[in-house]
Image (cartoon, rainbow, N blue to C red; front, side, top):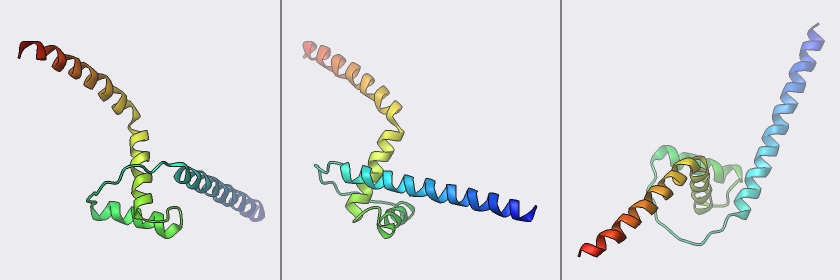
Length: 104
C-alpha cells in the first residue's frame, strides 16, 4: 500500500516537473521572439522589482530591460479585453473631437 502511494507521489512530482519545464521553455521562446523597438524609463515598486530580479536570476531573462518588456507584454495580453474596449471607445472619442472641430 505504501509503495503504491510512493509511486503515485513520484508520478505526480514527475508530471509537475515536466509541466514546469514545458512552461519555462515556452516562456523563453516568447522572450526571444519579442521585438524591442522603443526605449522607456519606468519606476517600479519593490515587489515588482523583486519579480524582475527573479526572472533574471532564473535565467529566463538576460537583463532588467528584457524582464520588464516580458512582464509588460504579459500584462497587455492578460488585459486584452480591456484594450479592445478602450480601442473602440477611443475611436468614438476621436470621431467626436473631429466633429467638434467644425465649431471652432
